[in-house]
Length: 183
Image 1 (cartoon, one colour):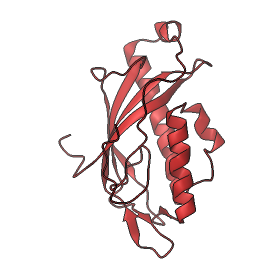
Image 2 (cartoon, helix red, strand yellow):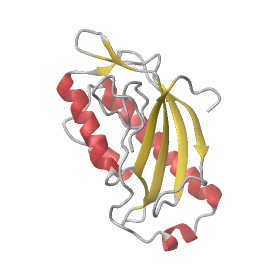
Image 3 (cartoon, one colour):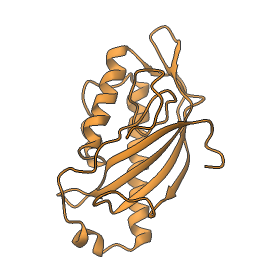
Image 4 (cartoon, helix red, strand yellow):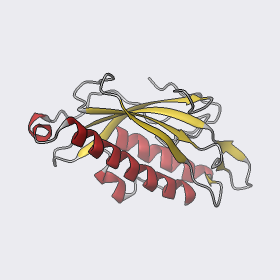
């Protein structure tokens, strides 16, 4: 279900490194009834919370890529992700670390857009966001400074409630694209 291009063998979730694909996993994971948790939120509040979760995770991802990845999922990311997405996120960060890659020093990717996408659903998702990340000016580089990834990535992020009642990302699809304009 991963739609990205594997020109570079790296899985970079939700942060937009062309030549890579973000976590994409089957929707089947621990099923949690979200009816009671979501009943108290309006659609606007639900999507505002989904966007807050995504933007907070994005900042942590950017910090992790600037630092050269991580051996395991940084603990602070657990408040925003759950399985199966969390495992794919950890795998991505570990791969970046093991290869000695990092974001080009002094640069950061940026979120070109975040759109509500309730028409895109996955088993037991309560909210879906479509996002585009531009890392064209913040590529991944190897230890010698050679560019190994960067560009534009479109992601569809699926959210549901964890057992603790927190809204989290549990799945995604990703695709390397030519531009975030007009998508």
